[in-house]
Length: 316
Image (cartoon, rainbow, N blue to C red; front, side):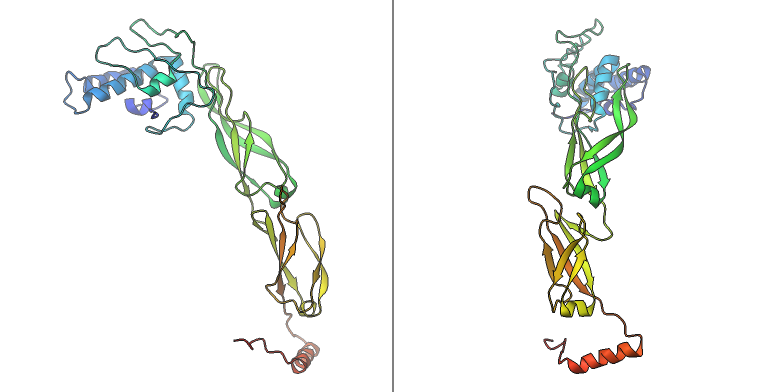
């Protein structure tokens, strides 16, 4: 079924007073009344306007509708009742013969709230509709160290809360979020009961947090794998050595084989993000050549060039 924006149908703001809503309804009802209107869709528009007025004229129905609408629904969206929905049945109707009934959306939304029927508002035999709150979504940024080890982060978030008068309001709040070790970029964390409040005693929805891992000055993340560029001096690459390499879990010794060249990748198994299958850390070697600034350095470079029968462009 399609969601209906009753405020949009009547052409009023959601903050409109009851008198504003009544005036808007009367104006549109006169405009689209099938007996006087020459509009092609007059009868359908007349029914739509009448349904909108029926939903908003009564404070209890309006409060229930506002709470659903606060979930971000728009006119024409495919609407599905949330889990725990206890509406159903017919929502009553007007006594006017010009209306043939309400939409499925109205009937589902107000199945437990009786219609006006010309005798004022009355509750249906089921009482007010009880429904679970909608799920909410937000984004949380963490650093790579927290993604690796886990931790707690304080989240500031504006939530919808229903006041004693039944009107939903936006309220700022904050709470601590536990980040599990090994969380990956884009992963969702579910916080049960932290979503939109339910209606008429219904359970609240859940809050889903999408994790965004901030860029790191040293490591690059690829899924659960971690990449690191490791600078080497020419003699370290030529002779081989052991180097203390930083990882997310602390420094480890890495063996550099003799004759290593720039661009070669070495793997540190299981040194990426933890998980059922832990990621690895890949170390890319980068040979850094120091400048020959002194006469002694220049002489050594010259001697090496004469000693080595090495042509780096032999394969070009």
